[in-house]
Length: 422
Image (tube, rainbow, N blue to C red):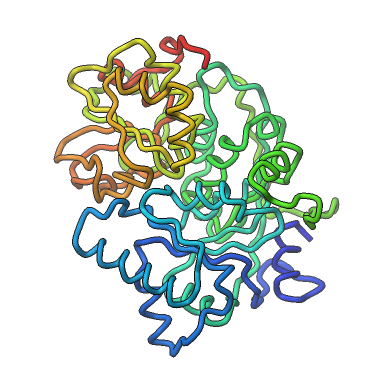
């Protein structure tokens, strides 16, 4: 069995499972974000009286943080009251950040676990060897009542990435390149495992970017085998790594598909409107005028991403015709970026910082786009209307590329502008 199959087998109390099997599994952690008050409503509609295990449930207020409307404020209020009533202490309020960042930071994510959340980018947690997947409100309500949910065991495809990345080429460029080659339907209801020396060389933040965007090719979940880097990170977050049971893929396991990518000569990439897999080298669209740049979200708001912006922009000023919005993925990221001097330098360069959370990534507040505007963003989706007006044009890029675009006011490669080793 694959490690992911072993996770489902254990949670279903079975010795063996295979792709296509339907299994009912015990869930280790259920997360509800503030888009989904329907979870609470469905809980009561189903006759729910008591949450099965308050210690395995968490609420994260990130999509509407701080609340931009009366309705979102009311939703927050009802969720707070539900958490209090059911003794759920793991509530991350409007000051904490994006769910996929705050959960690992809080030590809630670890190898071998089954994590389910009301967010499609829950695939992010495959970077820690967890089975992480997104579900809808009704499924999550079922979990609140029973602690269980059914799953179809997914096939597993392997993506092997080799080669040393050139300076200024980031994990975001790698996953955009892969999406461009494989398309948005390559992994529908499959699991995607990343392997290869390039992945081993990546830090945890980079691995999270790879896993985060597997859902953009239709994946049910993702996976990177835990290694020493994983364990060091987990230990720093308070996870008891000594008593972890980490499942290992059997040596004779047969993958449904195997893809190999040599990224030694990869250049900075950009996904042009209006599809994530519509990717080209940055040079192909060089010179396109940019109205706004956004660095943030569960894909591009970590400390490493803000550090890249700092490397490009320290001591400089962004183009006077371009806005730069930066939103740290969590309070912890924000504080560390302040401590290192990144925030002050970037504000002096012309950046606007706002509270940790999702911000304009989903087109609700803190920097949404006007009709006809062009935005280069370090986020994960560029569909029409994703960040505001349906007639705005969204380009996906790495945080380094995004920062260079803010500096020049047009799409450019970051490689000639990275001057600060932070």
